[in-house]
Image (cartoon, rainbow, N blue to C red; front, side, top):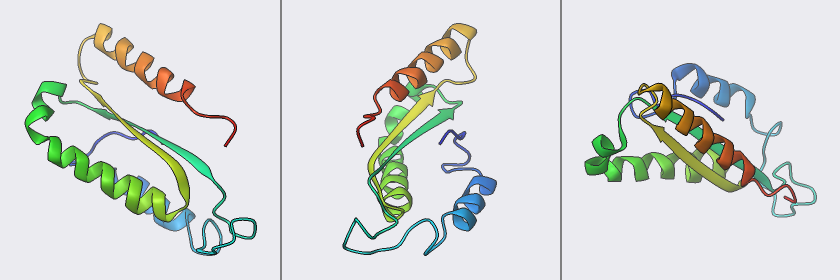
Length: 117
């Protein structure tokens, strides 16, 4: 998923989409037998552009950890994603050079996906 950081969370439209599309008995269930479960091993990568620079976020590292915990343990974990990765792309409103650097970071994050899962 790619979404901008919006007031320390995902935009409301994306949150609503997740709640409607990832519905019980259609997208996920909680069966112990993974051969019968809808929750097959899946990979989730979140790329989250944020306008603030990394040094602005440094004093607020606990907030970042909390957001990652909510998304990776709560939302993605509950939906059965087994490999979850969150990448904040800070400084997305910066210079063109900075934005190119963030695109490269996003590209590299995509290359890290283990296709065998």
